[in-house]
Image 1: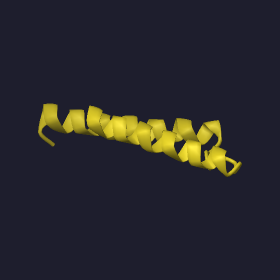
Image 2 (image 1 turned 180 degrees about the vertical axis):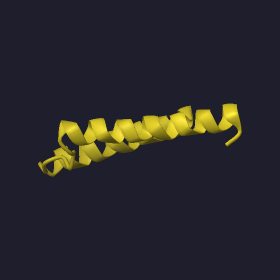
Image 3 (image 1 turned 135 degrees about the vertical axis):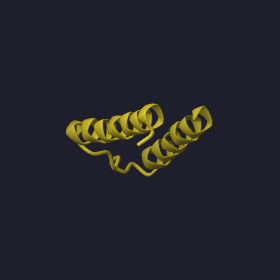
Image 4 (image 1 turned 60 degrees about the horizontal axis):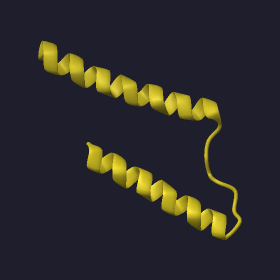
Length: 56
């Protein structure tokens, strides 16, 4: 998982540099969109935990 996280951060950094070079606005959703995405990820992790612990 750390490798995937590192690639995601590196990819985002590279895109940020490219967008900055071309003076383009970043395609980032509003803060509420980021919170919703984090909640979806948390829900997926929670489901995996429940499935592993209780064998659903």
